[in-house]
Length: 306
Image (cartoon, rainbow, N blue to C red):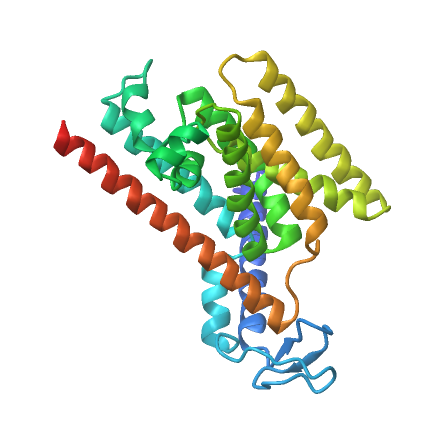
């Protein structure tokens, strides 16, 4: 009988295969980091990585971040779907803030008396009277309980990467925030208070529907079916569970469909479009941060008055 049993031989072969995979990944990473060419975003031609302009189509090219250091950073910090994870993180962080301020428990994590004044979107007459339009933004990141945030974050985890990969990060972030505001405005117009990411999530569904309707290939048909199933299930929940704002959901959905038809369904490719959508993204982020600042100041004012 040999010293190496079949079980030991199996483990040795598995470790050897794992080592081969790690070595191959390291070789591919080295090739990618030190490659001397980059792709033109407009015509997809391979050009020298030091080039500032594509010799084939004249497109102005980015130079910073295309060298070995920039490529190594991009390998260490994946950027395929970063915004979805960030949005989920912000929502979870805000729910933690709600929990702490509400002195929540396992059964009752959120106190409506705390979250309501904190940043919930309110009916239009009250919104106009107070001038607190920032609530249309902050309400997207507040949730009423475990089930509420759990379902919304599951939906964002499932829908977000699909939209982000189709539209590109800058478009995705801008449209997510825009459709969320549209949904909350629709709720205010129907004289209802609302909170949660549902309006923005329905906006993503609207974007996916319009994306799928533009093309006639099998992938687009699958995308339409995928978005359609989500819409049916979500609308059933909307009208079955009491207390859910149908106006915010339908407003976000219609907003997503409208924006989907108004804009291109491709990620920004040219230098001009990349800069324009990055500017739109950062404008939306700055406005969102400003809304959070106004929310914090208002809540602290309430605390001082109390």
